[in-house]
Length: 74
Figure 1 (cartoon, rainbow, N blue to C red):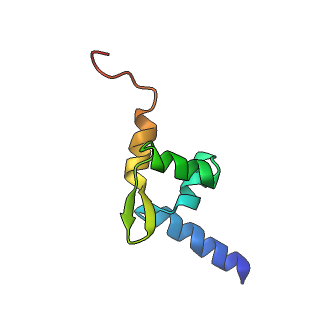
Figure 2 (spheres, rainbow, N blue to C red):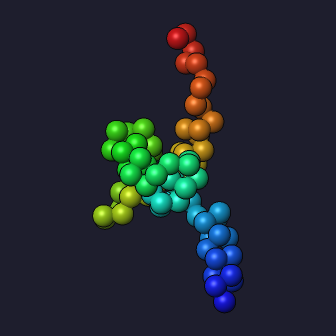
């Protein structure tokens, strides 16, 4: 039963448009606190809905894809 639940959670995680702070931290290999700090400093894109902080999956993927690229004219 527990294995089925984990599988379902994993499938939902790949389909969601947003990530929780915990999921984002796990994907980036950061601690939860480091992820919150990155959000606070504006380094990790996020949205707030009520008290929840969510990280848009596409914005995070773009951030990672653009990492290390030199700005044009820079």
